[in-house]
Image (cartoon, helix red, strand yellow):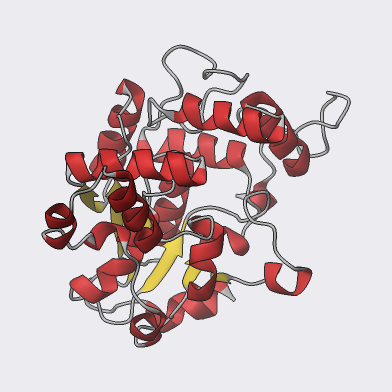
Amino acid sequence: MLLDLLAEYRSRDGSFDCVVPGSGGKDSSYVSHQLKYKYGMHPLTVTWAPFMYTDVGWQNYVAFKDHGFDNLLCFPDGIIHRKLTRLAFELLETPGTVRLWPEGVRLPHRREIQDPADFLRRERRGRIRRLDEEFDKPAEPVSDWKNFYYKGSGLDELVEHGLQAGLLAKDEVANHDFMFYRPPSEAAMAEVKPSDALVFLFTRNGCRRRNYYYSVDHTGFQSNFDGRSEGTYSKYASLDDKTDGFHFYLAYIKFGIARATSDAAHEIRDGHFDARGGRGPRAPLRRGIPQDIL
């Protein structure tokens, strides 16, 4: 499926043929490097800056683009972004609703990329609860974005809430087009092929440790300078943003689990260890990752 898809969109003159949203972290580094150096694609990588870069996050971003990738780094209007972030927290109880997604999917409409394949870096398992018949698909339908990525409230709801709360002024809203926060309409996306954002790791096993080791070897990725990350035992995931701890604390308040539990559950699913803490069937050593998942 993946080979057929790439063959359909691969450019013959070196021009961009796919868009990969990413931070320069382990997952986006893995996807970008695989597409370019294993499959001969010509990705344009796009980075929506985190709220507050960490030192290791910035270093990994620079190392990533310096290892052979064209990249567009987007910093939004700081005033508008802070206000929308506060509104997302007040209305949706999450600080991370207003980043990353729209930028990648808007590019086909703003740049001269003819019919690009738009690849997302992550697997969906554990992030989105779908009906069984909808889960096993290689793409994220446009119709799902509002419910699954904006928690049922899109930009218009956030702006209206801001106006009512007095956090946004009418002239402020009238003089800002909110381009980076408003995804294209379903009609506009239908004009681009493929019309849905494709999940690269749908065709690969979504192994976080595999992606980590791979990105260390191929894109200069570094793990957390301080050892394990805040609130967990791991050191290589969600490193770029200083506000990530707030995100996981909110998860603890809402769901009763925090970052360490989430990481452990993920690694049990990946087969690195079992539910009792023993080594799982796919537990990798530093150089012992089974070749069939590379």
